[in-house]
Image 1 (cartoon, chains in turn green, brown, blue):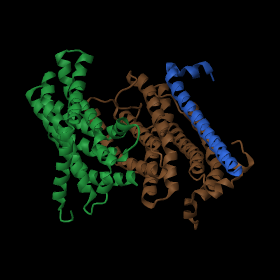
Image 2 (cartoon, rainbow over the protein chains, first blue to last red; image 1 turned 60 degrees about the vertical axis):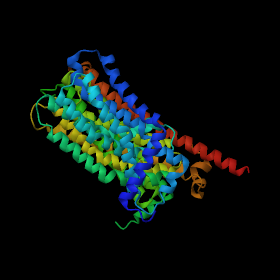
Image 3 (tube, rainbow over the protein chains, first blue to last red; image 1 turned 180 degrees about the vertical axis):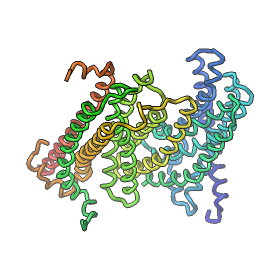
Length: 227
Length: 249
Length: 55
């Protein structure tokens, strides 16, 4: 284990988490189904008028993505926490931040990526334009990792606590609002013929910021929760 | 002043000091509130644009400013507690949170009541009001997190981490909301002329000072209860006058 | 000083007094809660001490 490089550790953790998740495929699918259901609820609630649906499409998809991500966050650490693996992970000689980054990547691949792939289909349901759909996929691709990264901090802080998914959501949702604002803003921009560059640039900046800080902060949160 | 500040970092010493300080904050707060309201209602003139409704600002503005200030102070104390492992710092953070949340709520309430006559709607998704709402969520998150952790040390440190992450995020959130709002046609607050009447400024300043003193007084009372609870197994607590004599307050 | 006019606040009375009224209520409630918490804490500490003494 000591011979393992940081990238090697990253790969190992990602492979492990993906393998474990494949054994419990239902978890991954429930997140996706939830996402689809929430998006479908909105037209049922507000009426099928096409112009209105087109306007709210980006917002609805984003809010649903937020909620679906929140739901799946508890899973990031809970399984390892319950069977004692997490305790061992805190003891590895390599950087805990890298290990956490691996878990975040795996989590995103299992809950964020399916949403990104599903979004165009749902966008069509709302009558979004082709450019709109294209931009939506780009911003979701940039934004859902940020949701996973910020969410990881919340998941680490609430390890083993009663209150579960709702508490994590309460903590994490306010912090995700900027991602929501610029994610939907980009789609609005392309629909009104304005440039999406500022939005995508800001999302990119948030992505990089989260990438740099979140694994380390999450590692600290894990240490706090596990003492 | 060559005071040994670290002496007061011990809960036992601070408990006594806080108890003595409370009246020196509570009474001036009450007096300043009275003075502020007098100036605000009887000295400041009617605004040409906003008529009498503008008088709400004498409570809305101080409360809003303080709700943000309290969050930063709370995060600061929490960070101190996390870095230096001082229990009292964390207790102060926990003590500040409820007051901060209440102030955020009041800021929203008064903001809505000011918005209705001014812009015709109870809620206008103004950048500042929306950020205030998010601030309230941040407070509630902090309180909820600490409430759901039984171990006090874990609660202190988890809360501290959350508060620090929150404070870093507040400027980002404010900027995003501001941008979002200007895109969606926000309204701006205008007075009849760009400079405010001197009495208005005076009233604002006095009310701000009053609220600030109030916050300190209430927080000191609250932190004393927290200290008692957390230090209940120590000797100095069991030897306290209040417990031996059966004090009512 | 015409008090009726004062309370009407040129028609904005509801908003102005609704604001100040809420603030006053919040302050009063907060003070009550804080004092109540202290009272309860002291009571519990006395119970603890009594339980300890009787052992």
